[in-house]
Image 1 (cartoon, helix red, strand yellow):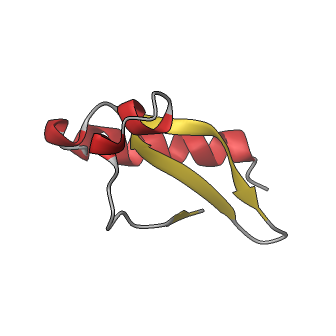
Image 2 (cartoon, one colour):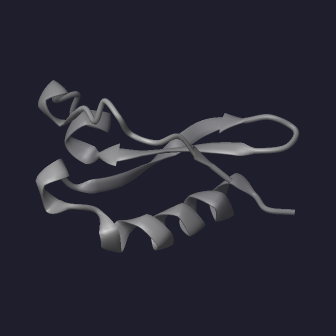
Image 3 (cartoon, helix red, strand yellow):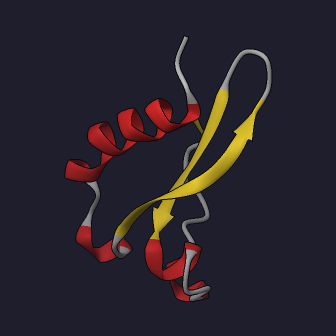
Length: 66
């Protein structure tokens, strides 16, 4: 069984290298959502997720499900 921590690490390993610099600093939130079958891992620009800078909102971002 995969834990949420493992799901976050998997997503970070897969997406961080491909993250375009113009979108901001890649970040995976420590929190997310889960049910009995999946985890939703929240990724985005640290400038938006942590600092609240609306200039870094990615409106067409995919939903990351593990």
